[in-house]
Image (cartoon, rainbow, N blue to C red; front, side, top):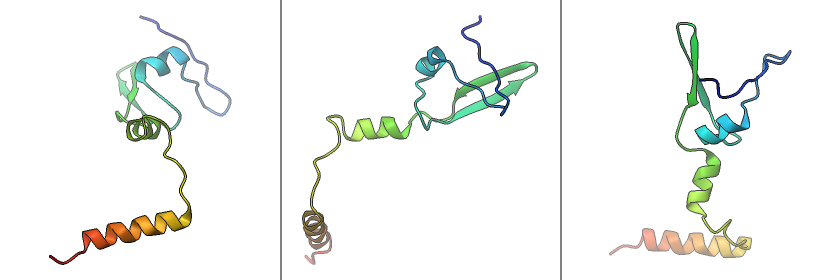
Length: 87
């Protein structure tokens, strides 16, 4: 079953059609695998997670609010004190 077509450029690059990118869940930076079985080539997503997908999972409401360098240093100090406190 033909889904889409692509053309090989003079630089030996190929564009993955939008329909295929959607079906495979590909985003910029995604890695794909090429597998040859006889005369057939199979293209599939190499891993399940892209950096964009991980970022969306960690920050579902968008990026966290910006903090000043002083606030970051104080948060690190607090974390280190709590982590390394002797009990």
